Length: 492
Image 1: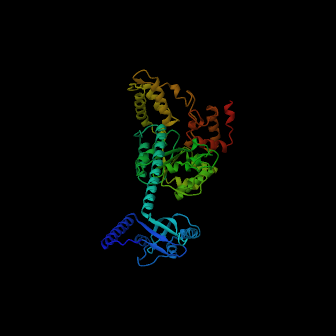
Image 2: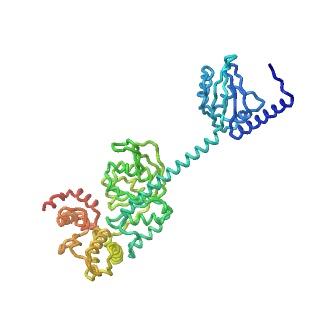
Image 3: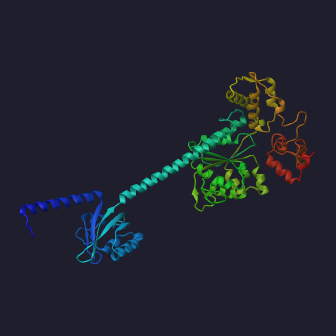
């Protein structure tokens, strides 16, 4: 029996239906979700207004599968075609994401879900589903991922810089500020003030213990990079097989023991300054890598293939005569010229004796404070002794002597045992210095005399090099050139 509703009931139902349809349209618009119906066999498609808006299709135009495929992104089109073919042949739910390209070239990301509903009367399958425009959420998620990635990079950099800072604090050089007022040190500081604001590469030369790292730190602190990391690397303290990995990092599995990717010192110093102490000790293959960084501002990790760009200022230091090393074939001349843009020579302590009293006062204050002692000064004999000594170990040796004296001091006036300054035995006449222009014909006799007194030792406070006033590496080169057997003096 068919029930006929009164006219007013029909009107009310129509009103309620339109109201529901309006609410549905608003909900779809607010959620960027369109609804559709699709019968694969007949090809019939029904779209909601929001579907037309998502695809940019006029509402009076009937959509087709070919139109949908034509809007699909080129990289997604074949995959979408396969999904539609499978839906046509095998009734089943659909859940897929793909991109479409709009007429203006913009790209939208769509999430499509559909449920297969069989028509019992005809046996035909119809898909009822929804299309969600997830472009905004995709962009938000990508922005969030980028933000997280940036945070991770900043966090890693902060941790790395903190690690470097802790290492640097533990291995801080002799003192925090340059102490001295003699003309030689004033000349050095004048050069520091001129080169610091620039980005030029600096090569600091000087004997061991003269404070080359201190000068490098002074340059960094007075440069625009002062707020970023200062990374110091002693090239002589790292095995030659590991120096490349230490400087440039390595990829996981690059060599035995490389269990994970590791950043090198150049990456840690990005935006700041890297100090390469004893740069003359770098092996040949690492010299080539360093040359590339200086020329191209990029490098590759050990075991890696992707170039990494860095913005790093390079300050190098050496106590070797690099020109002698170049002549001997152990140092690349092109690398030397790249490093030697602005040379700085730090004078040895014997050439700035006027600063000894200032340095002694500084070190006494420093170490007396550590051990809670009150020391007012040094005895007259000690002052004379300190001024007359040649200090082959330079400021580092002076620092160690004062620290030792403060530890054993039990008065308010410091005294130093002359036996602590045993770089030259008492009563032994000084050996002529090779740096004072000794004739080549006399060099062999001079070197052999120094080796005899030092019992075959070349470097160190008791070695022949400080007696002759030349770097140990220079003396080693001369010993090799003159074919001197230094071992026989050890047995003498």
